[in-house]
Length: 135
Image (cartoon, one colour):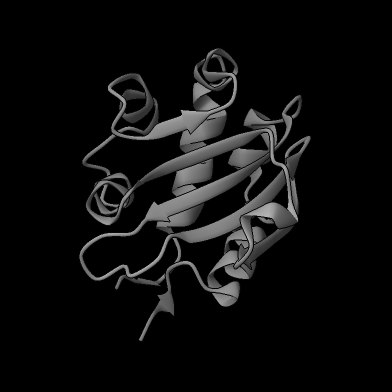
């Protein structure tokens, strides 16, 4: 059985995976921002699932499930319904393409994100390696 998507356990597993990924570290040496990754409510999701991730120079400094969105003020919020996140995790949707086509909705400086495609792809690869249990 996998790790439930959006749980503290999933967030910590992502943090560990990012921190052991040489690919992510090399692609993100100049990255200095934090995120809310949001699975928006709908279908089996009865309320938005938020995961906070603090990325700094190729490392993940912190990651956890968020129940109160006001607990942090991250630089970016990336949100999408469950089916879109599943497409990203199955490599059916490139995250940069998802941002450009607005399937992944972004609050924050989109230009900064699309200027760091290797970093975004490596982060997604870290998430894909997790044994995720989807709702």
